[in-house]
Length: 248
Image (cartoon, rainbow, N blue to C red):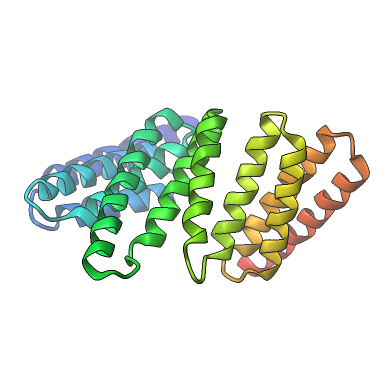
């Protein structure tokens, strides 16, 4: 079975490589990106990486001609996500960072021209959150802390901030505090995050709530507050069961 699976994976990689090799037409980015998306969905990460790398290559060619910036940003995000899914955080980091830099420049230019909030503002904040998450996974807690705080500062500038993104950034920042032994700060921020989530709406609310409850519970366990930690674990377990039912 293992040998068959390996051959199947190799076959997919070769098929994608052959397809992409002949995709120098204008829609090459779409072909490569779609191939990467399908492979990623099937958890064929080596094949997904090939697709996304090719998509970024196509987007780079267009970007240097003064167009295709949106495709380049999306390709870099997808490539970063692909590496992160394989726990290759060092490889993911430069792609997430470049996507964030491109978006920051675009947001600034758009807002200077129109005097209004750029449509890409939330995309930029979302990529910064990915940057921070990647730093945290790498154990670069100081860098993660700085980036989560930037996300929260940017969200604070909005009239109607995304409460789920805000709560998620607060929760992950709290975990950074916990990992650095700043347990008092961590507990206070976990409580703030949960309160924010209670008021939030959106498809990711339950997922972020579960992660926050579990991370908070772990911090309380570290503080020997076992009873309170078990209550949070139980609540997370109930929400996870409910979420699985809804998704099925």
